[in-house]
Length: 80
Image (cartoon, rainbow, N blue to C red; front, side, top):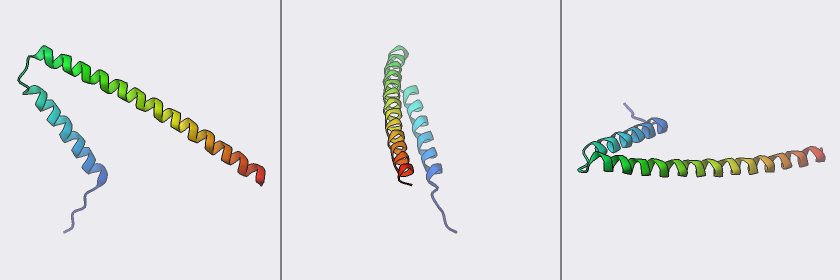
């Protein structure tokens, strides 16, 4: 019997395990709840700004690639 590691299943399990570990770490952290909530707010805000900047970079890169492909397509159409 062979066992294959499916890429998406492995990464789904890895992500789920990381989330569960983070939640358990927060639940058993030896600090007051208010301080934990404050830290969480800071991390969520940081992740949100990181996500927004990644979105903007991706959008800009996609626009640039789209313009390059359109120029190549127009150039190929004019040659024909």
